[in-house]
Length: 67
View 1 (cartoon, rainbow, N blue to C red):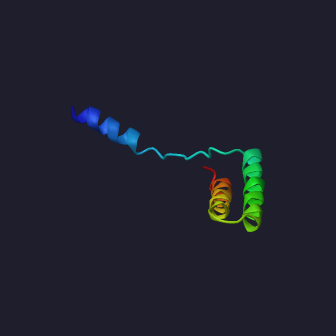
View 2 (cartoon, rainbow, N blue to C red):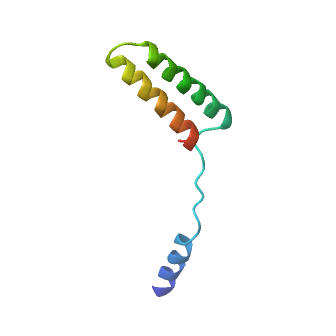
């Protein structure tokens, strides 16, 4: 039994490599769309202005961090 636990501990100690979900082309596209949405936010009135601006920021952040 101790032998099985030792084997499991060794397997769990392997380094975990995180991979990005977003490719380079998609990241560039998200950045462009995010910038466009933020620019539109300056020309829109009311609550929609903030919604469009926040969506633009989210697009840019996901492009930068790759999620």
